[in-house]
Amino acid sequence: MATRTPDSVIHLTAGNGTRRLRASFADIDDGDTWATGMSGIVNIIALGTDDPTTQASNGIDTALSSGTITFYPGEDNRVVNVIIECRS
Image 1 (cartoon, rainbow, N blue to C red):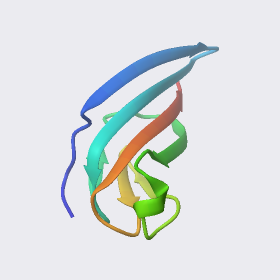
Image 2: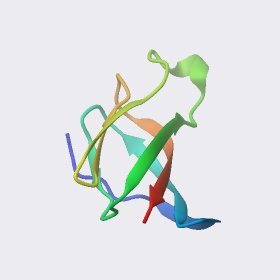
Image 3: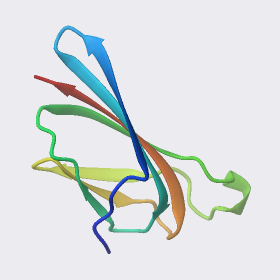
């Protein structure tokens, strides 16, 4: 378990007070966390972008607590894109 920082972040504006961002991580392990610094998070989508034929676990579960996301990919060394939607 480690605190992670995204390798890249792209901010998008969806209008109507909604913000979206996409954060990319090259290596996420089970229990890793990311302190997003964002409030008003209403949706998180975590997508594994590595080769699915080499992975033992499907999907990536997440938990949110006070703007910090904890990742549960079921195995280590996953390449992950995270899409977050916030409302202000």
